[in-house]
Image (cartoon, rainbow, N blue to C red; front, side, top):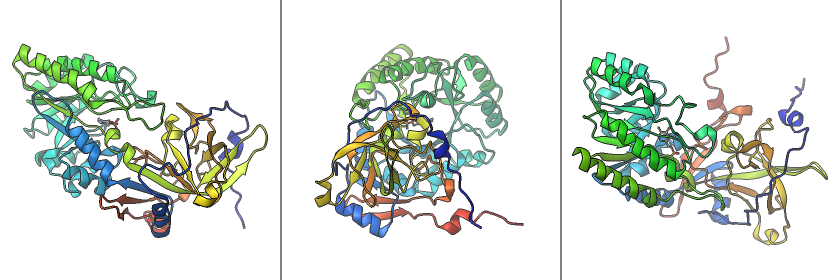
Length: 446
Ligand SMILES: Cc1ncc(COP(=O)(O)O)c(C=O)c1O
């Protein structure tokens, strides 16, 4: 008997939300791929596939290495942004360290070739197994009073870092703001004395202070928090390193402004110098961006597999063979990504430019790739060349928190493949598409 599928989308889209028009697209306006390469990707790897660009990854790593500093600098990569081994290996070669957020990420970084001493862990969940990695040299930033108690009770004799919530945060959206009273990340600033007492009680030497206030932070707030973090350093005479986290803005869309690393780094360099004059302490600086390093280095290559029109007063929809199973940021934050429709060049010239809504393949109205900025629930049609079945739809600047942060396997769609465009120009598979057998392999039917 045929089962009836009730699709969420038919229920939720009953009322028509406000229309926002974002005029950004032009045919074949791709970041680093040619039309011929798209054809090759479709033939060899299939769609949807994430395609990373080695040149961009290396350029970004080198730009980060030039961050201004007064007395030494160590840049880390927040691997949660994109943890595939091929990406990690490139950053390892470029001399970056790792910021991990779980022991599983620690394990992945080590298997990708990072030495334990170049990895630091700031985690919401301090797993018991971490003690073995700590003995092997992985550094920890303890993120709560309970983590201090737990790590202290292991009596490992290893120095630690402390992650504080400095009381102020800033993010591109409320959900990516991880500082201030609404955030559970880090030891709350007013618990400074308690944290000190606990470290003394367990004989823990504090060598690092860590703050990270959000993703897509306002550069002014970031600089201000750098100053506030130095006050935390003052409370711990044994601290030699201040890690100011990541959060640097990137401009995915024409109306967005990227953070200039030189511009925010210079004043921070100066306050480190002033701090040294005042205290005699020459602090080493660490930062650990994810977005800055990978956001622009990846495109999602998908295919238009259907179109639909809901008539006058409605919308023309382009339905992709990808969606929230690959790219959740639009549904989660109302995040904006450049979208390019790529058709056969001869045909492309004939296509009119019209307003269209791009949706994913999941049976869920939230699977929307063109929401209004900052409002995941509002449809925002984009002016783009008319898309047709079989065209490529290439979504750009999807390197950070896309492949790594999805509704993987929803509707039982397999995980997409990942490809690397190498610096020599050839395309190499770096993560195979998940097979159906892999998708169900852990199920037990008793
Ligand atoms: C502790 C920590 N450091 C660094 C980052 C990287 O942030 P971004 O990708 O905005 O640079 C994050 C992001 O969540 C984080 O939680």
